[in-house]
Length: 518
Image (cartoon, rainbow, N blue to C red):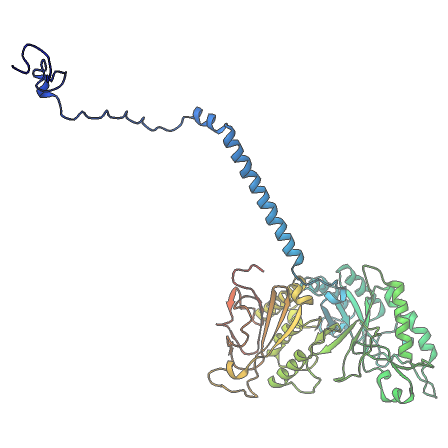
């Protein structure tokens, strides 16, 4: 019996899509064995947001919150940085600028009107020539004039209002004082030729009349606008004769000037006079103007100082007094001695004093302008306005102006600290002289510092050029900029490793760290 006879039955394989099944026909032969999966729909093409879509997204609450957080973070960071900077500035140590009086900031210019007038003209024409130069001196940076040689030698306080017979007259001095006031120049009268002890009677005692008349003479000059007076340490109060008669000695003045007197009698005329001077000064002193007492030191050694001085300024000479022109080695020794013994407890006014060669004159000018204290410059014909505008006069005036203006605006040169820099002469000598020699004095150098600002002053007194040794002062910044030089031919920046100081040359360099703008 056939298995599939007569129709569907047991074992039949009917069904659509199956090969061999009834009714499949040709479709069964072409049907694939594996049915493929359906492919996913294609991704939409990317396109940027339109302006309308972008504005709609930016105004959403999410972006608003993000922007608010960013702005808040910016201001919090800015305030934090500002507060940190203020805290660092407040807590960091820094130098405190001390208030300076006019005589501490001034450049003194020593002048003998008689000699100036003799070189220009006679009589009123000469004094007018001097008055015409006052605005020019002020433009150079001069702040005060010290008028010397006005009074008779060994004059007494009785005739402080009587000038020397060979000098200018009282009306001429009054005219000079008025013109100085218009030019904003202070005037200090030199009383070094006046016998402050007064005349003596047969017993050797000071004349009481001199003590009585002295305050009237001071008031006369103070009424004319005089800003102070200069006295010398060679007064009779210093003499051995006075000290021999005074059994109970009191040192009343410090700052290089001493008055010796008896506690019981106080008969020293100088002591009484200077105390009276202070009382007279109080009548004329104001907040804007203060009268001063300036003392010229002429002795090499003075007795120990006290703390009750009536002296404001002490004028010291850099070079010792001599009848001959000092050699380069003598000048170097004198400079080095003062650099080792700079005293910041007293206010010093530096002047050249002794005799030096013309080649060293500019070097000494740089030194006096950069030492701590107030420079006192002697009248110099090279900066005279009436001189022909020759090259040397122009260079001298330029050097003077550069130094005075730098000192006026730089705190480091006004009241900065002072550091002497010892130089090793055996390492910086030229190739022809490798060992120290009396004919080759070493470079002298010192540093004036105020905060992070440093001024380096180099002085080569010798006759040979001197290069700098980098190992000489390794703590100094390497780079700097020239402020002034004796030849006024150095400008721009420099490096201490390549610098060579020429013979009889002085250089002032403002040092700065790499990347610093000080």
